[in-house]
Image (cartoon, helix red, strand yellow):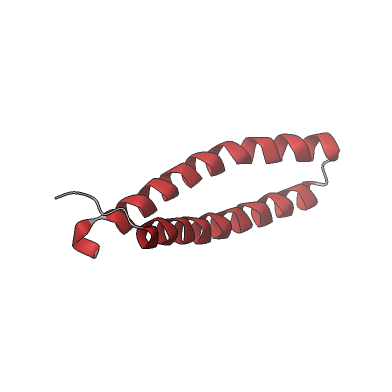
Length: 78
């Protein structure tokens, strides 16, 4: 069976991925902010912690987008 590519499935993929990625980034940003404020690190430490947290967030965002694409274009879900 072939994947279904219509405007509806593409927009649904974008909406689902964006919804989940924004939720994940909000939680990650809150946790990083709490760590930064509780450890009372300076600007350089804040940038280092944010940079270290951005790598897993980027990888998780890619996985979320792939899962959303697979879920929305699967013929069994239509």
